[in-house]
Amino acid sequence: MQFVVDTNVLISALLAQSKTYELLALNSLELFVPEHSLVEIHRNKKELQKKMGVTDEEFELALNLILSHVTVITRKHYVKFKGKAKKISPDFKDFPFFALALAKKIPLWTNEVRLKQQKEVIVYNTKDIVRLLCR
Image (cartoon, rainbow, N blue to C red; front, side, top):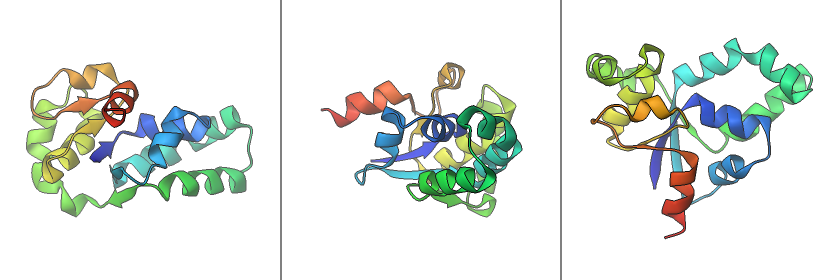
């Protein structure tokens, strides 16, 4: 199964060894993130480090562990879907995730409820992913 992964899912996995982390680490999932996601994470690095109680080095190690389970896709691979993604994204800042999902023709994994408020991209939350895998 393939999914575009929203930043909130990556952060959830980063902050706690949770069900989200377990799902990210499954070999049966092929996961993609737009490079925009890394910008978001690094923009919030100090806040995340504080919540995690880790040093710069420990943070980078944890982030690299999370990122080892996803493929980062550069803008050039989804930029032609930017216009459509901006139109359908309920939140402007999330259009890169929709653009990548449209480009790859795969669902989006996010825990942001408002992102389900469109009809072009299938959106699953973590509980939905667990249910899909348990079928």
